[in-house]
Image (tube, rainbow, N blue to C red; front, side, top):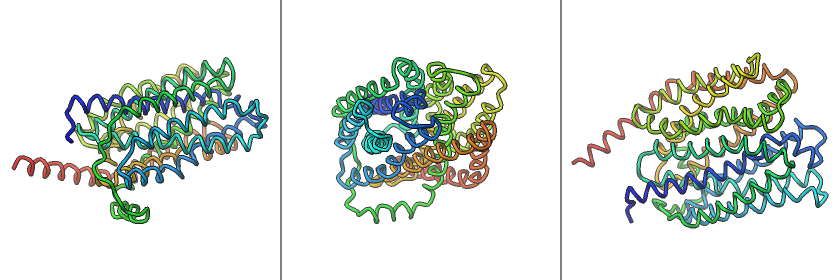
Length: 407
């Protein structure tokens, strides 16, 4: 059954709302992670915070492809989104009561893995459902981007204030949000182009037949690496170097996430008009430079301005990169393709936590910010020609499709 444009807009809004609530729930925890892990029994804020964040994203990496494959094979996405949302709600609730049960920190990390495994189903497959919609890949991915940005923008300051009440308060709020997400997801119709009866090996072989997917995957990896870096190292940087508490740290993170959120949709539409090259390549170079500027800031006011610049540049890159996945992926393997993008992104988060935390611990915050920013600049320079050629191929294919439709 065809999708009317009014129906598409309504479904786009609801899917964006699902993505928003998942990210809001996730980011509520970030400003208070240093105190939360100590409350769970960790002996060191940096090491404990690293493993607490790594546990969730390790589950993301392992399970994103599984959920994508199952949804493609069965031709269904909504049941997995709903189950993932309710499972995430239970997981966050279990973490909230863990201290009262006198669980070890290792047991808390195991709960965190289970919660992450459920959460990634709701997140990744709701993004895939946006890929299934009509209306322009950049526009649909722009909607995903603004939902991600708004969730993170609101999650940081709200989570910081909730953490001031009690370290586990953000977990209770996250559980309630995920439960509401599940109720909302039930109302969204399916538009899976076709079910795929292939095995996992066959599905992955199809993706190997499209090596151009490695381009958005690589950028997704580096972009999420910087996000993971800010979630852990950025939080400790603002608290250690500038003496901010959890609430003020949340506000500083929001200076990045607010412009990142508000500009996602217009930047996604812009990439539909001008192509993916300028947003992806030029945006990445500017993004990397602004990340370095945050680490070099001599005062909190200059750091705040640099955070705003990071958000603007990130908004230019993010929707265009996600749209590249939709441009390249075949209809029947969209779930696996977007799952691959999210898996690489989750690996980026893991790398941001581990490498960023290690660099900050051994070489200091300035070096950690410099290395992270240079990685973003480096991927843009290395992939310069590949992105240009891919953009030409996509544009040529679009013109040929329009010509065929006109005939």
